[in-house]
Length: 76
Image (cartoon, rainbow, N blue to C red; front, side, top):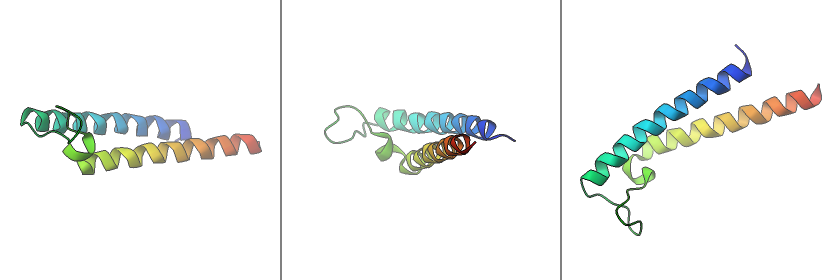
């Protein structure tokens, strides 16, 4: 499996986690649970902190893999 394939799969997972997070966010907003100072919006980190954190970790993994890929290409 190539690094490009791994990165592409991680982007797919990030999108899925984002959709899950948005679903929970919408549910919380429908219940009237809003984030202080944001009006009628519930921030993802308040609606689903675990999902929001997982999404951040996936994004960080993608960044690290892309950085590694760039370094590898730079070295030849």
